[in-house]
Image (cartoon, rainbow, N blue to C red; front, top):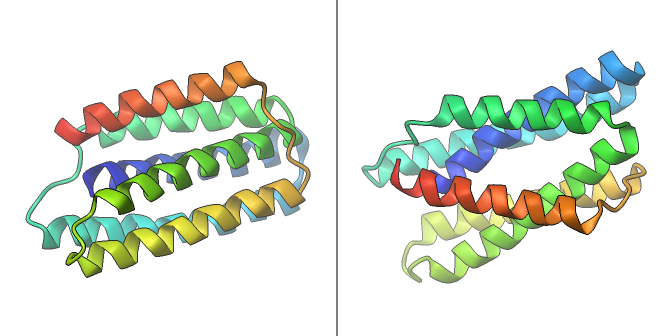
Length: 163
């Protein structure tokens, strides 16, 4: 659950940065509000995962400030590349998160109904965020960008699992 919590910390950073970028770089208030609305839902996920971490007697990652800063920088970079690329970044991020959550669901104990319900709800929301970004005009990111994102996520999940 710690890894999922880190993902939500990163989602907060990404959506905050992309809302800021939409306003600063393109002056698109509608897009900024779209990012803020998605970020609010991710904020719910953040609270839910934190509560579940506490219930399980665990702790969040000690590196959360680092994760937030890195994701914020990536969000600003994506928004600086234009609205359609920024939305494409959302689509790819949410698709990768959805795949991670599906894999996590397979690994959860069948009797951990609370965690399973949480992960299922988050997975649905992530898929919807990707669809909404796609409908808003996202472009498909090039394969090297997708692979770099996947590699960065692997590093983050591996480290966050332990620290």
